Amino acid sequence: MPELPEMETYRRLLTEQLGGRTITDVEINREKSININPGQLKSQLINAQITDIKRRAKHLIFKLSSGKNLLLHLMLGGWMYIGDEEDNPDRTKQVILSFGDKKLYFIGLRLGYLHLLTDTELEKELADLGPEPMDQTFSFPVFRELIGSRRGMLKTTFVNQQFLSGIGNCYSDEICFEAGLLPMKKADELDEDEIKILYQSLKGVLTRAIQFGGYMEEPLFRGDTKSGGYNEQCRVYDREGEPCLRCSSPIVKEEISSRKTFYCGNCQK
Image 1 (cartoon, helix red, strand yellow):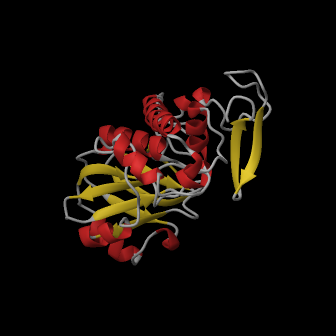
Image 2 (image 1 turned 135 degrees about the horizontal axis):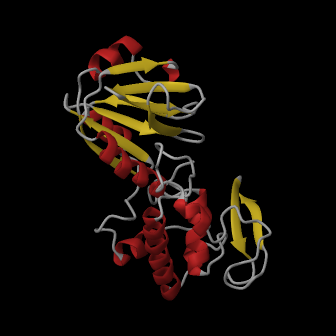
């Protein structure tokens, strides 16, 4: 599932490719992927301009000249592609937005969705999300107070979107590895130094992942060399049995609260 770095990469690339462009046509092939009648959605989107693209947690928000918003959550298996009639994936597209000669294909939206919302509806939809970990206001004192109120394991704490928004299976493991802490370590067992290094690791891993374009390798468009660059940078995620890059011990995979989890049992404590 795309996490914060993947969605931030999408936001930046989509802004470059489609920012300021006008929606000229809409095709809906799966009504469950949207929140209103297809005819209504088409009438409200056609001739609307994308004035801005924002990210909140794992969501993208397409700001429209009409004053409304398209809220996208790709969930598990969802992805996008910018192409045209000749250049597009041989996959079922749930929704297609046309921008004259360009088309934005939404693929794999079996669990994901694209909803048209007013500002008030959008605010209500996102109200339960925790702080943005890459926001400038998310300082160490804020993190220390936040994690000081938690009692669960680091893995389950980090993937809880009400604790922090945008982190999932991949980056929770990468952050714990960077900090040298086991993902099953309890948050209320951390000392001051461990909290500090965990905060630094959180910022460092997410910054690096964004710089490399996240770990999902599907390109957003032909010639996209940015998306997926972090896949080769992962230290533990999806590396079961491979040698730890720090101590050469084999990376372990196990399930924690039904989530696959990767770590080094030797150098993470």
